[in-house]
Length: 296
Image (tube, rainbow, N blue to C red; front, top):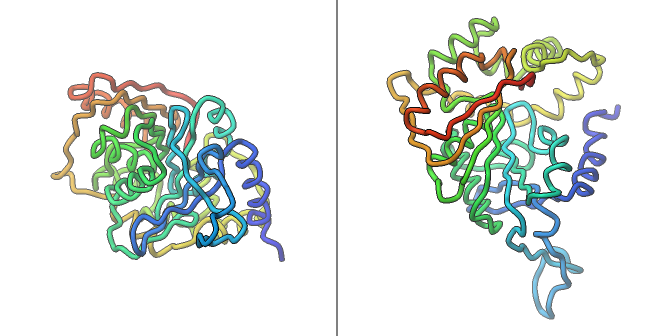
């Protein structure tokens, strides 16, 4: 039986190419590959010179530096890059060079390294961007991607000039994690974010979306098969998120940072945005926030 979610992927890929981005796998280092959707104008195809070895005997890929201001869209935990950002790409590519990574263990991105921290994700992402010729960007992070984007901005201020973060926090402390899971009725982050059944997926969607939409069980089953691969590694990513309450420090950010937050967000409550703005503003004067009716 055809998986309906998988069957839609070729159409989504085509739409993304029409919007102005196409996929490109970047070899970060031996054993680590990160997939990016990059601006079509940055990837030019030309016939190889005589004697030149390429994977494709007809054309070879030559990457060029972006020609417009760069926006990097970093996805959340429930879906890979273009699934998360499909409705924003077309509008953004008119004025920006848009880069959409698949974080490690999402989409086609993989590593044989054992580090599962947001710091490692950020470091890998930055290495990929630099190989693609990106030297300055605005990072836009959603949920899990927001934590990765915060790390990018902290570690590479010369690269990240500004940030927009939606439904995310600087770091997941054990107290925030425990309080969030308790309020939602889940025992672990994996139980919430890595469902194994239609019932579990419906529970995730019920707390992660603002408008409740009805889908047949068949579509939920197909989504489970396609969107929750690499379960063991993703469970390790969730474990790697949590730090002790004794360890967190608020970095001093030099960038302008705008928080875009769902007023009814059930995973990261609105009070967390207020708290983060209050604490971070002591160190980062350009830390702003706006409430809106969006969720994970």
